[in-house]
Length: 285
Image 1 (tube, helix red, strand yellow):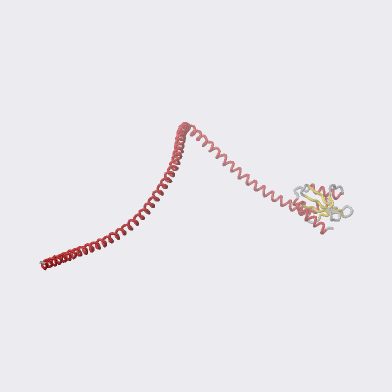
Image 2: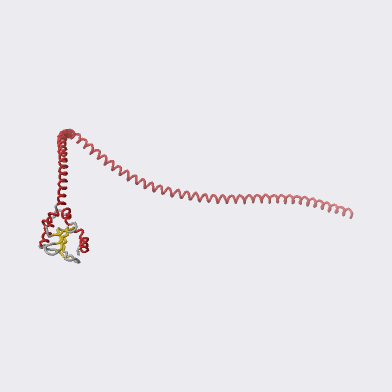
């Protein structure tokens, strides 16, 4: 009985071992499949994570780009708002200017309308006065005709007067030339007979006859000098007995006595006084 029991136990143990081996094999296979499935899941999870990271990066880039675009849009909106406010202010100013201009134009329009009314009234009055003006115009034309006749007569008389004036001018020139000839030919003889004791120096005689407008007073004072009755004479410093006398504020008579009744006389204008005094001091003293 003991042998069969041992055999049964052996068979049972073997059977149990086979069942355990089978169960272990099946469990191992299942475990390997689960591990493979887990590895596949891990791989897929890694891919998903990678895709998720890439998506997050893209989302971050898009978010940054969107933020930048949003900031740009906000800046553009603010710029547009400022531009709109400026345009509204300019529009308000321009509109105000247009209103002022419109008021001025309205005033000018009213003024022009008043002027037109005044012109219409003036035209009406002119129309009423036109006939009287035409009559006056005819009268003026008649007067103009008579004035034209008188003007022609006056022109003729003017031509005659011009002719007579030319003749008188030529006659005056001839007389002037004749007087000049007489002045140049007779002064020495006249002065020598009128003032025999006077010696005229340099161009005194030419000055008397050509430059002095009325030499009578000068000749009278020279006569007084010659006769020794001259007064108000000034001594010229630095000269030998030379004296000076003023005549008519524009002329000077320089003279000195030479012994007896004779004297030397030099007649010159005031404007050359300094040069004349130098000449007297240099050559006559």
